[in-house]
Length: 89
Image (cartoon, rainbow, N blue to C red; front, side):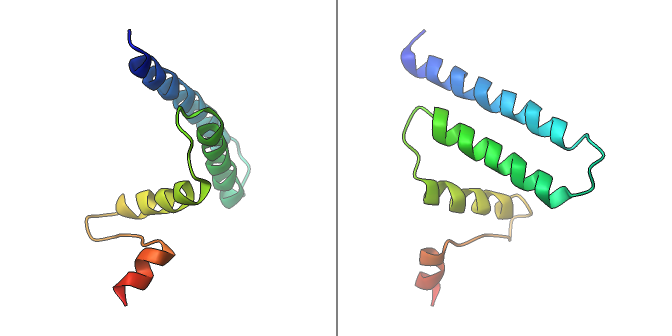
């Protein structure tokens, strides 16, 4: 097995374990959904920043996560980072 394949397997395993932990947050009866969502986001973000095979720029990770959230709504929804939005004007 080459090192690139091994790296992807490790990354997948880390994100899968984080996903299982995040799922546990939403099973409890706590009514503060926003707090749970923020905790889940921080858990995934910190796992990526700490364990991803390549260095990840924090600002890019943040805006890319917002872009991913908006793009999953439908084919017409899109998020623009501030610099991209300024280019539209």
